[in-house]
Image: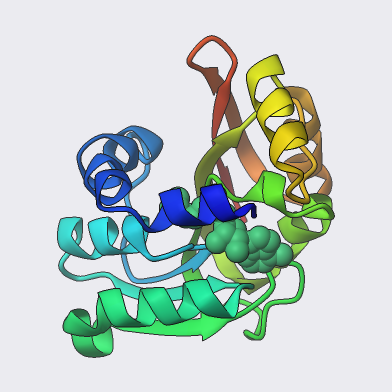
Length: 191
Ligand SMILES: C[S@@+](CC[C@H](N)C(=O)[O-])C[C@H]1O[C@@H](n2cnc3c(N)ncnc32)[C@H](O)[C@@H]1O
């Protein structure tokens, strides 16, 4: 991620917006419970919102950037044993097969140049019947220009490309829904 994105990701306005607007929208049709893994969690804004919203959730919060992991660890310490924070690459998760009831991914897959490798990995760590859900930017013009300007590593993708990737990774009940004039995409799929 670029420095600008990293600063935004840690900011108080983003945390408030994530809690009030983004999380309820992103998971509108998803019922989270049990053991949940968040991949690419940044500074923990969405994790914090999920832990407040679902008091029974046990959340494992991961990111590939040590600075983001440290920020999440500080932010989420008040939730005690309900949360674990770890350094982990979504394409090579350090968890056994069938460990989680759900995997969530918010605004992060396009930052993974090999995002297609993240999909089978998310499926592997889910129990049979578990849910993979989240949202991301698409390769619509605005996101493409912003990422070209800030020069952060990324690979934006289209709605159909994501749908195909999820099916090829072995997910069932694949729902991929464009939103906000095609700038964003929400997805949910069953392992
Ligand atoms: C735009 S931020 C989104 C953060 C958070 N999900 C949110 O909504 O506030 C993208 C995050 O993905 C992380 N990331 C990028 N590549 C990753 C990878 N291969 N595995 C895990 N996390 C990754 C980045 O370090 C960054 O924290």
